[in-house]
Length: 293
Image (cartoon, rainbow, N blue to C red; front, top):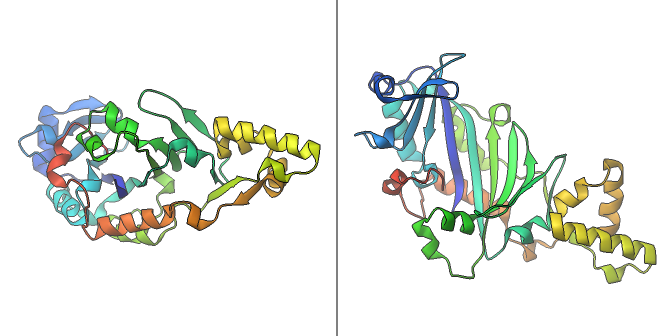
């Protein structure tokens, strides 16, 4: 359903006087900013939220809403209206995603692991399960049930899916020190990055392949944990000194023909966004109440 740039937040030292004054008059104090204003709720109807006058450093933050459906050229035109000098803008957060139709979150979670990530988290709620393969202040990699989220938000795009069709999204979030290219004019460089460099796709060797009883029992125990928690989480439940041994005896790489080309999809999605090839609802729909794609 979607792929490419999914969220964009920028830091700057100067916002156009018109919007700075508007935020001062109509904005509200939130988090560490003295005035925050959603420009979609003003006469300007721009898909932008401005965070003005940071409490600690006086800087401003600008968030582009629905950036996946806006495209690169339109994003720059909008930002030129809001920010005085784009050459001084810095990216503080940028997210990328790829949607995987026909496969469930847990089908993916049972074959995905990320190294050298040492943590994992699993959330289950009414909007669907979310599996964090990596979560830190700098970088997050997550899998979640995109179809359930669309349904929970009563998003019209749910009509594009068949009743029994699965839709999983893999998302990469880069923040702060984890943003490799901070200048907005260098955003095209992200198309050349392997954002999933640490991602490995592996599955369990069949239990019947283990002829020794103790090894077969260990394989069965590992299979139960992978079924319940996913591969990444199951491996993290063992000491790091044992993981290489476990991977050697019980796991094998998945043939590339048996799984979606996740890296390729994400790279093509970024390239499409940079070239303004938006394959799904375009700019007018970003005024909806759903802030994310």
